[in-house]
Image (cartoon, rainbow, N blue to C red; front, top):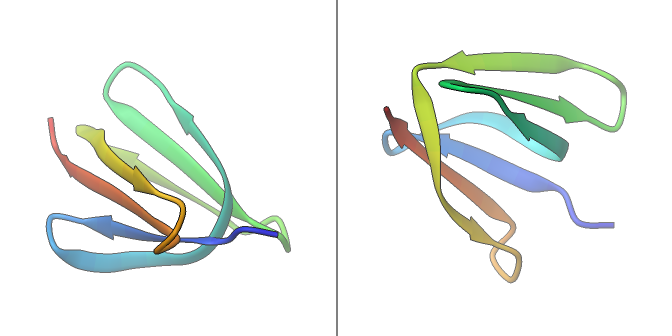
Length: 59
């Protein structure tokens, strides 16, 4: 399985994300255990499967 490290404005903010859902200006990520975190006023700028990174920036 592919678990992503979520990086927001250059800082690692969540590890082992297996789910991501983008809203208008927010993103919800979850890990395999069901732990979730919401990031407000952001946008996805890169998804790198090979490096398992999900890169966000401020909206």
